[in-house]
Length: 111
Ligand code: SF4
Ligand code: SF4
Image (cartoon, rainbow, N blue to C red; front, top):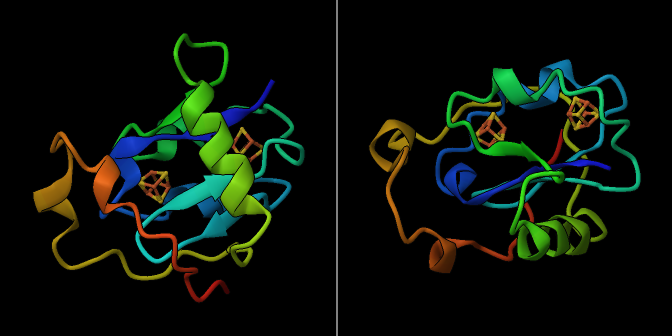
């Protein structure tokens, strides 16, 4: 089992989650974060920290696509353990539908 970052993180990227992860298994893209599914120890502490409610346990249904997105980018994006600045327009994007196509494949800067 693992926790998975899902669509509503896109363009919100508040990064509250990275500060609480005991095993530092978050990886940073330009406008999204992912969890490495093989490194996550399923502690669950990040889930309530996410203001966008984007972190979901993979025991929930229909998460296979997001699990694959998390796995794919965790292998190529840099690790992030410290909270940086959220995008200035993060609140505007919180909860908007149709953000999937805005997911950038570019890496973030990491720590
Ligand atoms: S706290 Fe939520 S929205 Fe913010 S970076 Fe983490 S998963 Fe994304
Ligand atoms: S569930 Fe725990 S180990 Fe997994 S990403 Fe969240 S804080 Fe890290």
